[in-house]
Amino acid sequence: MINFATKVSVTMKVVALALLVLQLPWCIADAEDKPCKKKYFDGNSSFVCECSANYCDTVERHAELKPDEVIEYSSSKDGDRFTKTILAMDNNTADMSEGAELFTVNSSVVYQTILGFGGAFTDSAAMNILNVSSKVQDHLLRSYFSIQGIEYNMGRVPIHSCDFSLSEYSYDDYDGDFGLVNFTLVSEDFDLKIPVIKRAKAMSEWDIRLFASPWSAPAWMKTNGMMHNGFNQGFLIGKPGQKYYKTWANYFIRFLKAYDKLNIPMWGLTVQNEPTAGLIPFYSWQCMAMQPPRMRDFIKMDLGPALHENGYGHIKLMSHDDNLPGIFEDTETVLNDTETKAYTSGIALHWYQDNWPGADYDQLDKIIEHYPDQFILATEACEGYQANAEPVILGSWERGEAYSYDIIQDLNHFVSGWVDWNIALNMQGGPNWAKNEVDCPIIVDAENDAFYKQPMFYHMGHFSKFVPAGSVRIGLHSSANNASQLNSIAFKRPDGTLVTVLLNRGDSEVPFSMHEATQDGYFNSSVPARTIKTYLWKMADPSESFTESSVTSEHPKVTSDGRRVRSGLAWVLVMAWISAFFSLG
Image 1 (cartoon, rainbow, N blue to C red):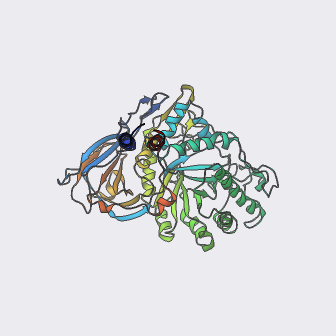
Image 2: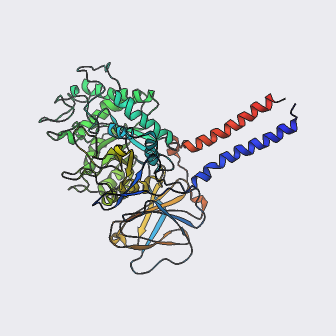
Image 3: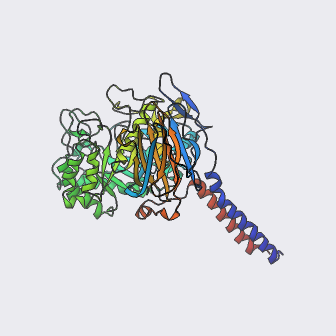
């Protein structure tokens, strides 16, 4: 017989052990980052970081910022990849040396709330991920979605096929099936996209915000009878409010329900991917024309009511989903109709024509000025898409700079998040059934059971890792004004941490001092040529932190895989003691 004192002693030991287990996340959060394993490809401007079954670089969270401590993360053309340095915030005067800039962060000037960052779960991306060994797959997905990676919290999902599929297909290719009785998901969903999405979600501390986009309706619903364009453009047959538009709206509902049944709910939808592409004769992959007046009426008469009548009124419906030129006028056409506007939440933006005439970023400011209850989300970008461009350049620093420059430009003009195109492509930039190969932040080398993290990956991570959902953009002013060589932006996170990102695309180093307008003290640093840096520090007054409020309810944190395991271990220990307590005698 074990006496009561012995039981109490065992109890205390078990509780202590359980508490120790629960403290392990702090130890792991402070773990050493694994450095990049550099690999150079001849003739390219920088290097990639190689990952294999046995090794992959990481960027751990810094567990807790100390008072007067500034954390600097640096990536550069010549050598750095998330190199971490601890700086001191002190009461010394600012660096006033020649060429030095003074940055003033003003956390009381608050702009838009950040939705997040991510990439697309295309057929091709999933196929490439699943084309390497399971350990390499895990490294790749953790690199994007785990707390040891760059912590993507958003993902785009094509509705049936797009060009980054092996063929054109839809979920219902039966002509005249207005009841959609033959609608069904296909092997590309069950064997490719869905398994990869589920693994990403399991690795993430975030409940990943997924949004879906269609490239084209099934061929039988379209005026040209094809999912892409020949000589004739392809529109939905008839007019909004008529049977083809009603059927297409119900197709969205069937898709949402099918993914819901597999525990993959969608956070958002875009109405139509690049609707202007459908106006181009001989456009060689899936597209469908939908001009703004038609999109307005489709939302008002068909898609919006279908979503609300089927329990999907919470879905964030986004208009446009096209490039920058003309975005304000197109948005006016859609949202000046109050019935249509009631069904929408945001405007989706692509980056492919940012240098075209009429591509004025000030249009984005005007959209938020006129429609402050809407958000703008950048939903697609890639490099290597230009005519005659090399699809994949392994180690291109310039392509990474293009990403971070566009992110800074977009977010400084009220864009609330930035979602890349494919999360993984092969060495040729595919597969793509239309031979429209492009570049990607992660390139998979299946032949060598490895993958390569491009400079684009690290440029994305300088935002996605350190600016979580619920952060807000805040005021930032440079003493150099518009003459600054640096591109810059500042945020305040939900925990009160201040974040600034500085990008130097120039060929000379820029020294600077930085401070918060209401606080004492500066920190001094510099940004070398061809370098991006992210800085994190806490304000002295803890009351300056804020809560994620409405964002928390729709985008909650979930336990990371490591924390989930440790919490589970603690629970097992406690349950084991309860069992032992009553069984010992």
